[in-house]
Picture 1 (cartoon, rainbow, N blue to C red):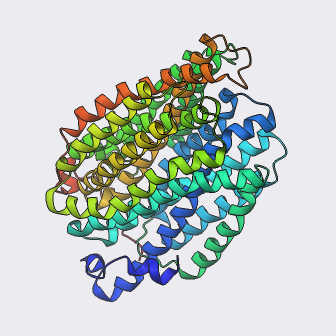
Picture 2: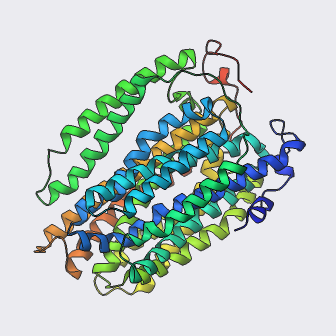
Picture 3: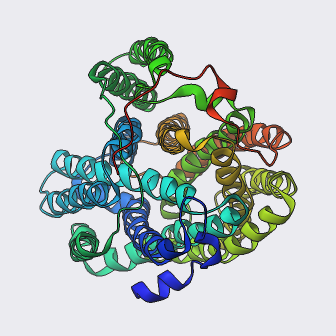
Length: 508
């Protein structure tokens, strides 16, 4: 998509805000267009791995429990890096943050493309994840800064096009490439795209934010990294334990992670009194933010978990090649993208509740269909229909939830709110991936399958059923939370807590 075409999708009126006067509207449209394009690239990369994972497992002679680290390590790195983005976006302006993100992504792509071993491939994915972790909060914070409240639903709907079309296109592109190239080809194709985005961004991304000198609390960085890495590692060991290959008992790193997370939260509460927290948790004092984020997190756990198992089911139970798996997953993602602008306009007019309640019910219906409508001998038509239902339902969940959660915060907390949402999304994704792969491995092992690297159709069906059932049960919690989501009115910071001590003046 050409830059001018992308820019024209952002209405002039939607950017003529008190924060962004009319003379700055063109600058703001350029910033949003380029950030949307960059997010499309990194989302495309992230979603290409799922369909290719069975082929990579076969090529590198690893089982699903080990192969999941290609997605778990990616999500874990994002969970560790994202909390720092709240500080980074206050300290640096838009263009430098963009350059840091795309440079890291390009370097990681090169490392992955050159990888001869599984360990080096994981390292490349980790470096990629650093850039991806920065990009999403940067875009969300920019949207909240330059778009007024009455236009955010429409813009968020357009953002959802990018967020859904990339995952829709990713699997089919991945499947097509895997048919004709070795798995390294996925990264060689992505590398020139990343370098092109980096070159354009270095010249054209404008600075639309204000910066200020804020300290980086190193102790908080260490605590957050230890907490999230220990939690996800412990969760991943549940799957390994299911097949007798756990390095440590899963409960040990999980307990360490929870204890460290408690210390991290305590330190942030202390630091936010002087407006110097790495991740300002006053965001959760907003009832609308807390409810909306809880709903999104529960949906993400079930979504990521189910979608990491879907390719395994399609490959080993239905016997579908990667290209056909991608083709089946394409319509749902495209329909989700097409629904985005309509959902955004409906949000601006009616608020979130009339959208998220039917969306949560549709999500539950789709996941329960995965659990009980799919099995050995099932038709791919059932898989296609359930996937379309899930993706359309998510269109009615995510755009309103993003808008309602961030819209309930004062402007001073936009960057922290964006970082918090992105962090919880990645932790939820990593947790969902780890738990569902553990359940899948447990089901495969319980079926008496002799080779965990190459399960029989019946064994893969048993493992998939167990994992999908967990997602279906969790979806009932999403329905309960959707009942309490409402359209927010952003308070002043002093209304959430006592006014913090004065910090240094902004640098323009």
